[in-house]
Amino acid sequence: MTVPARIIAAASALLAAALLCACAAAPAFEAAGMAKTGYDVAVLIDESAPKDRVDFHGDYGCTDQVLARRIRERLLIRGYTGLTANVYDGHGYLFGPAPTKKWADGAIKIASSVQGLRVLTCRFFPPSDNPIHDRDRTRFLAARMAKDKTLDPARVDAVVVGNTAVVMGVVPEQAIQDHALDMARDVDGVNEVLDYVVIVTRVDPEKNGEAPDETSPDDSE
Image 1: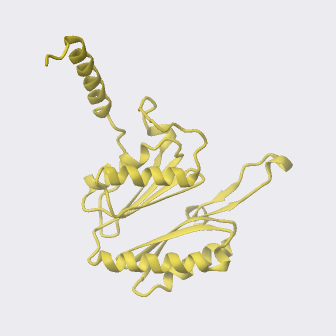
Image 2 (image 1 turned 120 degrees about the vertical axis):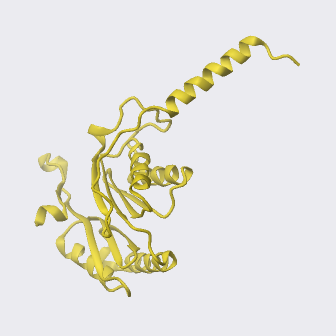
Image 3 (image 1 turned 45 degrees about the vertical axis):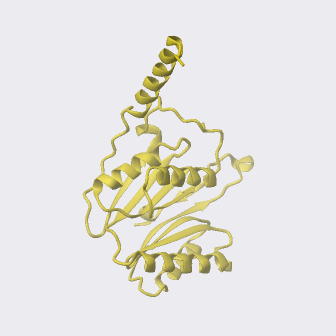
């Protein structure tokens, strides 16, 4: 059966358009070189991400849970496994082992393509000698945090890579932040705890119109 020429032409046009979208230049983000302790990068999404990218989901006031799920899905689709992604108040966190800096940069570009993120903070580590132990210790710590009454008012998560525990999230006061970090230090085999917990004091906007006051670990140093 002969396919009409107009159908072939239409299909070719659609394929060309798809290739152009797929080959669009991704944003370039600078990061410090990979070292034994990993490296940090803070990406200002609103300033750096391309505004003309195609996003089939769109941003309609997405919740943090939805944004985190989209980051994880896009990473998995592209073959990036072993990373932890969470979002708190539009601030994304991406942590985990990375075999090379190029691999880590690819993960950053994929995560930052999720529309609705304000900031993306990343920390990468050399691959662990025993990823199964890392998984088990991460699950153990997550289970303890989920049952802990002190952390009820907070949104706190943690991941263990090698001998390092990374704690991230949003808490209402210093005492709860300290408690979360202490819980990570108590995990067997952990000898370093990295603090990415932000203290946020919620303010009723109807009373004084002020935005929530955020204090990051860097602000207190």
